[in-house]
Image (cartoon, one colour):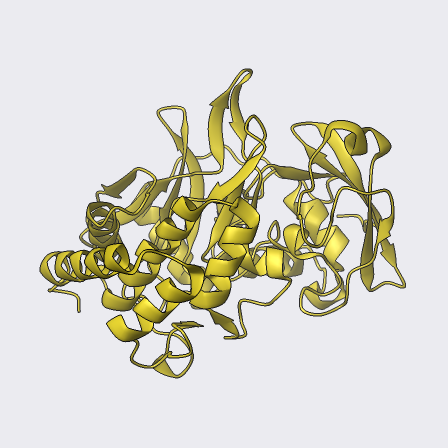
Length: 375
């Protein structure tokens, strides 16, 4: 693995711009002159489409702009990358953010890719889902595994705490999750039931499946929403999380659904997208999904239509966050938000209150009926 001091940022093999590490701390970015002619702002608030050198702050993303930090693995993915570095005799703390982006290369979520790549591995091997789950458990327990390279190649660019692999099923890109150390045994089945319930509530979801297991009730899988079938076949879609757009860490509970609503309206300029966010907020409140941090809300960009929209919902399951409260408060309330707080969010953004009340009550009834075994 070689150190990277300069990176090319690409979108569908087009040069978007260059990043250079300044003072070993900050990744300065500049758009390419051709991208300025007919490209789009990859992060509209932080990186508008103008000719200049953009300089990030060091915090909260260690000298990166949020849109690039979204490409980096965290949780499980970062654990794999660090473990692989140590295997190769490299101290992870000494590896800068540009080199880590070079390790991601083309494997990250979303359409941005990075060159030159710092580490390229190719492992062709077939393991059953139960075998993968066993090897993931070894890594989480800090035990030796002979499949570290396989896990890295298939899941080293992923985000989130739970182990996962990115794979293709019937020529379509899927993400399959496995239990973490502290998960209940049926966590895969629970997330699957949550996804089906969310769809009943009118929430946009990618296709989901419960993959069979001889050890538990199944592994949750979902079709990746950062791909589409384009003119040249399967291609990636550009996306940015709320954390990336707002340049704020998802590890700090400083977000409110009032802020998310304003962000959604400003970015998409469409009240229908605010309705999507409203439904998701209601579901998270009634289904006790309290790990609703700023990286669990993502916006995707349609180049053909030149517009932003909310991505399909994801990571919906029974969960807690800091102090048992919601990571994102509901009009200031994080511990026990209810319909009163939900309606205040609706009023503040200008949603029709009669519609909001009826929609909220409908979602509450569906959740309490479909997920009663988990609440």
